[in-house]
Image (cartoon, rainbow, N blue to C red):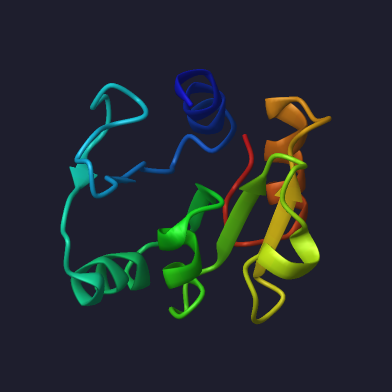
Length: 120
């Protein structure tokens, strides 16, 4: 995640990253970015609702994000069937199978979806 987020910020320099911490209150990026922690699903959903984009590995919070109006991108590793577990909803909720892609290719796919981010 550290390498990916570094590339993400280079690609979208006007983007801020907010890490939503899991139940274990641990960071996947060594607390390098601002973070939010709560056990209250309504609070988590409210924070996601106020974000421009929710980007995540396949997890419970990713599925919670689909209940918001926020564009949601799920990064699936190839072992998960995207037809079953991808974020559902409008065009701005989708999965990317990252098993055979570079981080740069993932970022380009996100940009291709025209989610309002400005690629540098």
